[in-house]
Image (cartoon, rainbow, N blue to C red):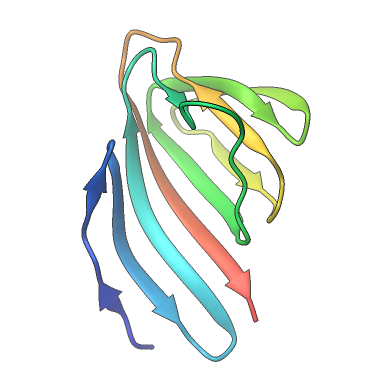
Length: 105
């Protein structure tokens, strides 16, 4: 497995590594969402990969695939590729998440 290190910060988003093998693409990272912040800031988000997340700290409310959700620390989530979603941190604490994007080839 060849791993490309690529650390960047953009509004609390950090990619820890990417692996593009013959069978799948994997991207692994973290994100910090401050209180009052909505992700994305406008509209909905979707991507070509399945998204797996673990909430380390804080909580979020939002909508995924047209269904409302609430998550808190120690919860794990799955958002299928192509599913439109958004989230907002309505708490007083920054929400910290570890995420994984996986796309099979």
